[in-house]
Length: 362
Image (tube, rainbow, N blue to C red; front, side, top):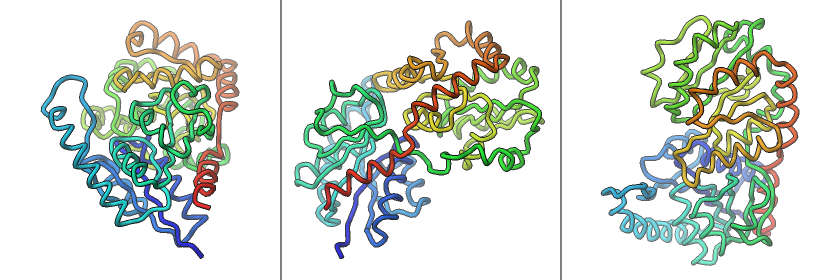
């Protein structure tokens, strides 16, 4: 019996970390005695989240380039060289059968070094518009698992497989959890529930919007679960009340989705994939501050198929109230959006990605 070894790297945000953990969990269920090692960026959230999920992690001294000249940018070449050397050392010592990257700063040097050492590599690209790192790595990668169609202009077509993004498996059947969810969050079953998601760290502009609109929303017999992010919790916890729950972070995403009638969300790749599976009416507010504006492109891929509404940050002040009130009071539009977004779901992504990894090591 061969004992397989896997190195996974994904980090910076929950959107890169959770897919990597989902892939590791699926590999572990197929190969119970396999060994796993994660590689992340020192000081980033993967250094906490991965050990919490039960896996070992090593950190690289790497960070992204800022858009303007900073001391951090001046340090970048040194950090990159250091991270390549460190990656080489980790790979030589651990001797993985395959190296899997789900995005984030650390996956660049790690997969680059794996390619140079002729270790098979798999890229899992979450976005509809890939970042520069994955475009460079794709030339040598063995397999590229993508979540959106039409990425031939970025990646070699013969290496690409459309799998979707790995999502938490407990989201697959949330309909049956509605009663439990209402009790868990102590909600009123006769009111509509609005769920606001700003991502694991929070979204300043979304939080400012909800603060401004809260009175209008609650006055329409709506209760709000507002995940404001850990960076902003101290500023917004004062709005906790009978109809408003302000949370830094939500652990039970399955239950919170089960309670939601309408969702307002950023358009990070993982969130978009989860929302397709959950099938609730969504208003996307993409972050304009991410590389290549990929959140707008992620949201647009759903909006173009009539599966969601998108409001750009620059249009919130003039359009949000009208759009939200109209959606809240239009059951037909809610049903239509739910039906259309659900048709875009790819619920078996994790299994398919792991099938591709298994083909490489067999």
